[in-house]
Length: 248
Image (cartoon, rainbow, N blue to C red; front, side, top):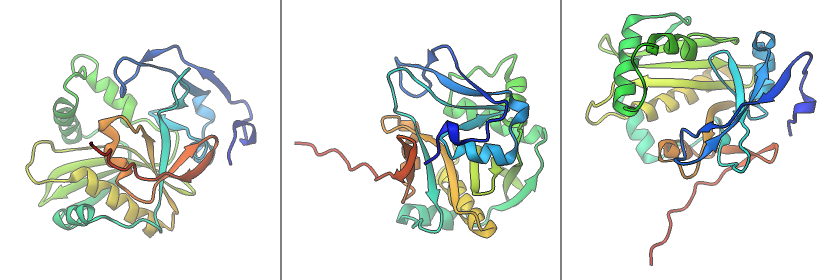
């Protein structure tokens, strides 16, 4: 069990943001608990924070802190216990021709163009106008911890980019974007399977996948990776896969 008073806090402070519209549950407001100052967060300390349910976006480390909602559940996969489903095995086989290349965090125009195509396809409401390049830098290319940018190519053609944090006890999946609209592809599923295998190669026990919300369709894919652990009431526990609702 990891609580805030167990952390090597030093001069860290925690504050709650003002309410803002929830990105996942329409009609609801969200708040976050943010860790400051960001420059004190090292890879080691961030590993402790992520084990207490925190996550980062760029240089900001936060966790949900909503007034009347606990829908966001931090989740992680115990990689040695993971067993792929038939669908996941098909995705792994279908995309086995992808080659991976590790890069330091840096701006690559080809990556940004793919990111814009992905955002327009998946999140048409996202503002990709004046500040989009600046947002891309802040969101994905700034990190206070050890981070890799991984590109996936098929016969030399860029298909997917993934940003992962490398921590003492696991990998944290920060963000992944891929070529949208190609029929018969399962890049997102394949990427998580690749990250699980990369954890095993590094001897790391956990893959952290951020937050899961039961009633958010955008997050349904996460719970398909079993077994899954969730951070509930200050401790990690097995998170069963929800059963389909019975219709009368």
